[in-house]
Amino acid sequence: MDTMRDRFISTASRLLDEEPRLAVVLADISADGFAPALRAHPDRVINVGIREQLLVGAGAGMALTGMRPIVHTFASFLVERPFEQVKLDFGHQGVGGILVSAGGSYDWPAGGFTHMSPGDVALLDTLDGWTVHVPGHPDEAEALLRESVAGDDRVYVRLSLQANREALPVSGSAGFAVVREGRRGTVIAVGPMLDDVLAATEGLDVTVLYATTVRPFDAAGVRRAAAAATTADVVIVEPYLAGTSTAAAGEALIDLPHRVLGLGVGRAELRRYGQMEEHLAAHGLDPRGLRQRIGGFLRP
Amino acid sequence: MTNTTAATARGPRAFPDLARLIALMTGAEKHAPAAHSTLDALWVLYDRVLRVTPETVDAPERDRFLLSKGHGPMAYYAVLAAHGFFDEELLPGFGAYDSPLGHHPDRMLVPGAEIGSGSLGHGLPLAVGTVLGLRAQGLTDPRVWVLIGDAELDEGSNHEAIAHAGPAGLEQLHTLVIDNASATHGWPGGIASRFASAGWAAVTVDGRDHEALHAAFTTPHPGRPLAVVARVEPKS
Image (tube, rainbow over all chains, first blue to last red; front, side, top):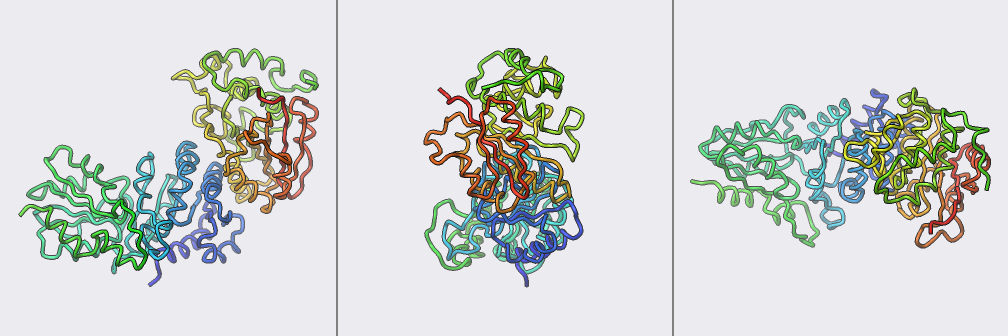
């Protein structure tokens, strides 16, 4: 199966043929994959070199002229390094664009902490007006990208090598999907965490919601699921910094007595290399770790 | 230094009127010395070079002027008001809560402002993208100007843009550097050489001499972006 990043490249390359307003701005990352598209559309596929402030600024400048830019590199160099460009050149200037990241929290663990970006969504959460998509499968990444290209807003699409076995139908406007129904509580699985969450909650009497668009947060869906259970106990499992969405979940449940547990990537730097599976286990995000913490949180 | 003004002015107001307009902006302007370093260059640009009017602020084929050095925008506001982009009645409100005219400009509030600025080093990358966006739409006639300061040039983002725009041959791109010698470590070897070595056409000119500015602004630069370094009296 292709990766989400492969699918992003093939989909964006096709969309360039169909959408005259679309542009792709790169900073060397994925430039090989986009080489055919660059030959076909030399004025709309721009590689600025290893210059991430310019990457974001130039993308926003294209948006000022009415183009719909896709701006792409690894998450750490797309959101963290040029964060002020994201804040000012898109947000303050009042223009839209699509940031598409690869690398996620630990797609390349052997590359170490410089190439890990568990804080990207939390950082974007300090800004207004960003839609955040976290697809869990290449098919979902394609659907959410196509939807984003058709819009005018500010969108972040977080691609990862971690993926679920099967895709679900997704849309940014559909809200969280109910994957399993139960009575002891609600577990929200974000994007690529779904398979491990389903494995971890096997046999537990809980509702499982699946979220691929986390901003805006589907407060009504969470409220509905929590109100249908015997207690408004909610666990949210995210593939980035633990607790990124606990405030949003708390706001959704403001008029119910509730408890919220946020699971995700720990703040402490592990200083470990290895494989993604080892990092998932180290952060307690493998089925065993999830089962232990979700089971411990839910009331009998 | 010479000020050739009324003879060349074709705007609704003449250059000497700018002093009166600036004086309308009373209050706690924090960047007053910088404000006036840009005055002559801005006047010549809007009066004789830029093809944009209050009627064409949304026209795709207009020239764009991006004020990157957002500090000291009084000269900018005065020039915009003098050319009718907004009414001079707005000027006395400069910096007030409900005024569109802040101590740094906001494009969402100021008629005629192409970008909001204040944080240094954002305008030139935005200008690069503006040229790329125009070119991608077949709009190869509009010219894009961005004004930066010599101290602003300290910001590394500018150098990312300079190094890209030269080899990319962005002929529609023009950078005006107002040099009042305020960069803490200076620019040994000159500012123009930074642009020239990246493949730009670059000229240095007296930033108070309107004819010299006009000649510099209209220097032919086929296949390359143009940098004009306008030197004014050093910031005290």
